[in-house]
Amino acid sequence: MSAGLHVFLFSDGVSLADEVALKLVAEQARQIPGVIEVTLVMGTPANRATLVASELWPVDAPATAPEDLLIAVRAKSDDALRLALASVEQRLDAPRESRPAARDDVAPRTIVGARRRAGVANLALIAVPGPYAAIDAHQALSAGLHVFLFSDGVSLADEVALKLRGRELGLIVMGPECGTSIVNGVGLGFANRVRRGSIGVVGASGTGIQEVTTLVHRLGGGISHAIGTGGRDLDAAVGGVTTLQGLGWLAEDDGTRVIVIVSKPSSRDVADRVLAAAARIGKPAVACLLGYDGQIPTGLEVVTTLEEAAIAAVRLTGAAPRGLDRPVITSSATSGSIVGLYTGGTLCEEARCLVGGRVHRFVDFGAEEYTRGRPHPIIDPSLRHTAIVDAAGDGRASVIVLDVILGDCAHPDPAGALAPVLVDARERARHAGRSLSVVAHVVGTDGDPQGLGVQENALRKVGVIVCASNRIAAQTARDIAEARHAG
Image (cartoon, rainbow, N blue to C red):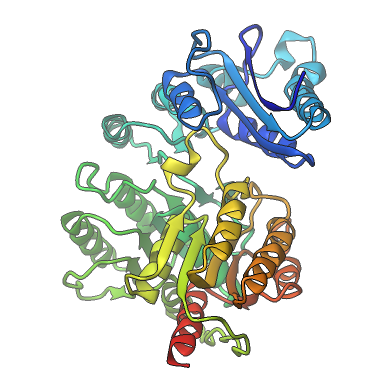
């Protein structure tokens, strides 16, 4: 066995089609010193093509079946390779070793079996590779279950069919690519631990929901429900089916007094219909639809940032929230551009709009082009880490602005993993005769497993300017860059 790229195919007894589980196995193995890359995906044509395009799978390798498990490992040494393979094998075998022999105790392998076993369950969480996701979601609907569909790679036609069928059955389909929801206080996907309260959220944005709900928590408010819809729900082809259902749900919920709507840029016609529906509900409502420039219905408050949405929602409950503090800027940076490297799409888009200017560059590492065949960067930030070092070394960036996402399913210590990368990046800039400022916003609460205060302090210790919201982070980065240009 020699160092470099090694690929493996398992086709006997593999039942691990859970996308999240595979990503976690890969992420753990990737932490081993000397390991460059580890990828685990099911052997669908799309996944195999992605691996080949990423030079992680030989073009001339034998054919694979969708039920096969493909493992690609790239390491610097034989020892690192062996340790990575041992880590993967241990984690793949663990569920089978711990599984009781009694048939009644065997974990169900289908939606129907899980529904029968659970008895009173009314919601299915689905996180399988895209080609299978629509099939499982239809099975869940047939079993009378609402659906939280985390999977990406689901076609637009399948999404429309699922949502229309769900609506006909009186069921809601959250997703596909639904990163976050909170239902009756229970977080799904990348949700944060926030207090219960009277503010309900509907969002075509996972990290947008996270930003609003955590800021509501920080401002003293609480969340009744947060219904994720998937990022395409407000596209013209989908028509806002889940968003409109979610609004109807919150309208009838006695525990919800104020409603917040959050979305990435969307279809103007669909956004108009959604806002009109929200205005008719009769409950105070605030909307933050990034890029929306249409007419605002009477009785609805429309804001332009996620922070404003959180503040307005808390205010509409009758409280008097104080504004979030901005940091005092004492750092200096060489004249140059802002580089935004984000794990959340809505946070990336909001920051891009706030910063403005064509010379600046923003990248959403949560976009499907970066997550196809890889863990989401909220779980495994290694791809962004590489981009940070590259940005520091290319001579153009004077400020790097970042988001750091906490939550139950997020990386266990994202700031701890990020800190040495930032030290390296700033050192590279210094050796090149340049100074580099780093600005970040941590999305989370002290109730999250990672701890908001712990994560913020870890970043401050390495010189990061930590901001209380994504808006403040973007505007702080802009102020630093403008000051450098003015100087």
